[in-house]
Length: 125
Image (cartoon, rainbow, N blue to C red; front, side):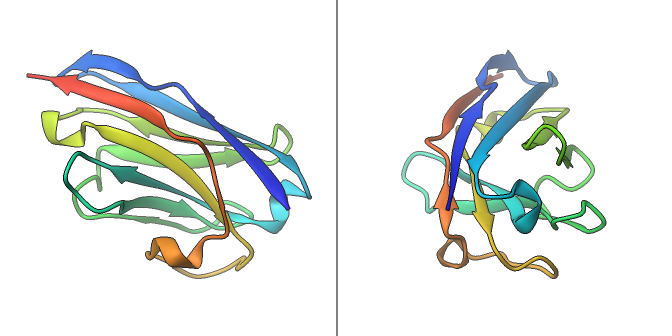
């Protein structure tokens, strides 16, 4: 199995940027595709972005496309979420997740096997 630790959250003003990190330990990091989800108050946890094991394919929710970028460094066992042009509606707890399907898209949280503890992102207007 793999253990995930999220970090990098914080408070920013609208239009600002943040970069989240998710450090993995345990089994070989490159065996997993990685994703970011977020949970806002009174909302269901929603898919944000996904990157396949080699980094060759990425997938984004429409709400973040063009503003967020997911990337990974397999040598550092870390996945990143660069968030630009942040909006108040991006306020949420962000979670990284891992699954063993190396290719293709997966948008449902039930398809991911391992989760980080979450990191809070707050965007003020």
